[in-house]
Length: 344
Image 1 (cartoon, rainbow, N blue to C red):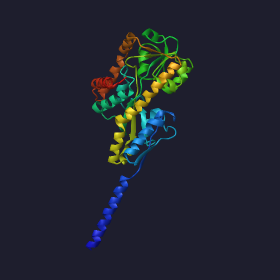
Image 2 (cartoon, rainbow, N blue to C red):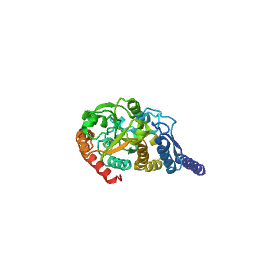
Image 3 (cartoon, rainbow, N blue to C red):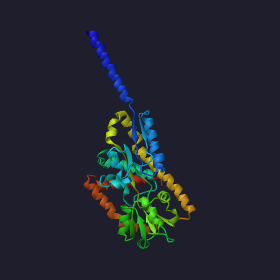
Image 4 (cartoon, rainbow, N blue to C red):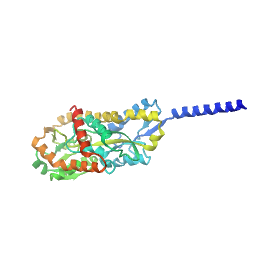
């Protein structure tokens, strides 16, 4: 009788060990959506690089697949992850301003730098130190900030004063820059970046603001651009979040979660930002070939625009405070860390 009991016990132990072994070696494939065009470096380089890091860190237990085209419109990336259409996706934070407030600190005016890696690292540090978890329904993997927007003229006259800016009809990215342009009484045609070429190429406007140099090239508006006004403190930049399904995250073992976390966070943020920086550098070289003049903003012009923009920063701080964030402290910390980390 005891022999049968011992034999049964051994069988149960072996079965449990096999089950644990199978669980440890279970493979998880993540469908990672990329809403940019298929040939964009986010789809071809940034996300695949992260996939290789994850695969290596988990000894092949977690791998990724990127669909050949986006499974959801750009504003719907977070929702597509929540609904299980995709397992993970990058999300432009401006499209989810009704959900997150903290990460929008990086989108305040005149605190950006050409060093997107510095901004990305500073944003992650600020998130860790000041922000509550606003990512209900998804698991936050990383954040990053892209290279800043600049101010461009489509006429032979560069824009280097408030009066000149007020005389223009200008395409502006919705949100911060569009609201600032309205405040200074420029004629504003606001629209998403994907519509910039249509508006600019048709001559509807004679200036544009909201695109970085690489975006000017990517959206093929170089032929319509005559000059760029560069501010010491860049006028605006945008932040993104990289989110994963909570349900999918729960299916991954604690050890592999730890490995994925190490491959994400600031490591991913710096890598993604570096791609934007490299492409900005090459775009500026193309500007020279296209005879696009680059001028530094007159300090008086920059000071006047900064003074006009304070309502935007005050608005973010007030909204952050309402979310339980110490808005002023978070803003000051982010600005301080960007300056300390920036190498440009």
